[in-house]
Length: 314
Image (tube, rainbow, N blue to C red; front, side):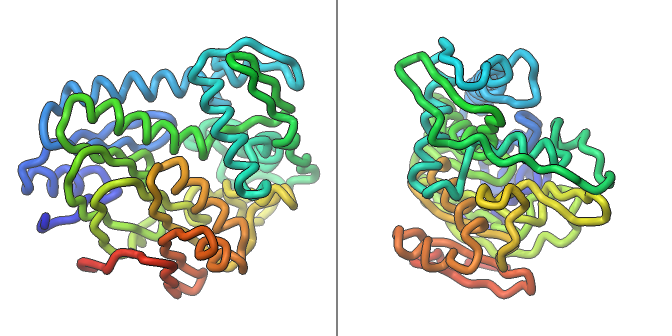
């Protein structure tokens, strides 16, 4: 057992890794913090991950004019790369599996609310929003080999990040015996190792309250979605990035964070997002699908679902 947890904040993670004879690196990509911890061959693993993240960014970013996503014309069949076709398929399947709770066509709604550029450049306090357009409709997404079509407002953010974490862990695992990759707190692993992970109630690096609990991850993935990170105000109203496709507005349920364990980071990310959006029904939704999860209510109450790991230390 490691004596210190892997933290979601870069420097403390690096210190803990050194104490345990592990190798670590932190940097930024995809608009978030990237953290890599390996048992060996750090540089080779990092190079492999950097290539994965560069490819994902060029394929699926809605903040790059030269990305494949930005070049799509609504409802027009377009030839795309195998990676973009895969990312769009993952997003469409997530929407279908969650009955639309996780919808990759909320991009226009997000832009109307002010999240129209990489988050560090978003105006934190702006005028009131007068119009928020409806999602384009995930059921209008189609993939035929390397040809795709999708409606306006495509945003693959959540599922693309989970896919990037999974692909990064796989790529780094070709060089290192054991790997942990965190993209903004969404974690994927490869190889056999016991990773103590600090599950915090916010992924916002500017947030001083990093309360949470430490659990040991023996494999698979873990993702946390929440309403305390990526927040801004419009007309004095606090808004956040987790939209309810049914209302086109930020989810307004009882949970401020949802952390979910799953075999892949894509699945963990989709489930944690769906839990926040489903609101009062989150516990039932997660339990019915066999997930282990940690939900934190707005008043700080913690609810564990399924076989959530025993807390190691606070």
